[in-house]
Length: 250
Ligand code: NDP
Image 1 (spheres, rainbow, N blue to C red):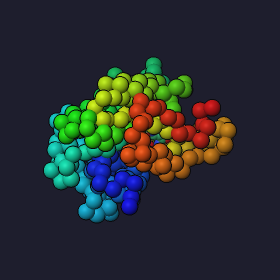
Image 2: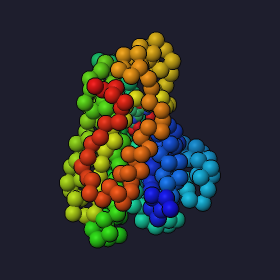
Image 3: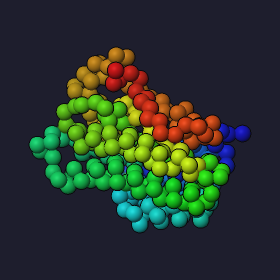
């Protein structure tokens, strides 16, 4: 028996990096998984890899109609989504003095508004499905350790991730009697597309050398916590914000 047998999970941003990893992990633990992203050919390929337990949907998290359509498709195939991994995110790195308004807006739209829309639509449907009685609603928001760090060149991203942490606690409070648990994972740096070629250059290498453990976290580092937050075992855990960063932010 898998820890997540019987669960229906939606992973946003499942076309790349952590989202792909999360989808594979949830499926391996027994969940049926709905894979959402704008690059639909990528989520289709992943769904094919995962077989009948997976469904690919076109999803732009910044668009409410797209979010609703993704949940509709998920429900039609598997029933109510009870496990939501709001993972889609982006970074428009650049010094604040040079950042365009369009880049600022798209960072906030994706990392904050998109995540809010994903969580809200999922919670509405869970509550309508009787989560207050069955208590199986699980929402995991993917934040970042940059929520509590300062740097040079990613201020809107960091601020949007600080907002994610606070949003998570507030949504947990709003839905505390509704059987929907909301928790936030704040990863440290992991090599994915979001970092571009930064880690290959001198700046990236110096950053890794500056961490206490002088190593990059592997992409599966978050898996055990994700499965825990998604499972019945975390019944009594809501409103948690947890760093998983190999001590990078210490
Ligand atoms: P990637 O760039 O590899 O993946 C980002 C994912 O987000 C893609 O699948 C992309 O899909 C999706 N996405 C972006 N915008 C939208 C949108 N409007 N609608 C739907 N999907 C969207 O980066 P990671 O896997 O590293 O990032 C995943 C999450 O982890 C992000 O929230 C990121 O901030 C966070 N994180 C990552 C860290 C790291 O070091 N890697 C550290 C801390 C946090 P598509 O373009 O196909 O729509």
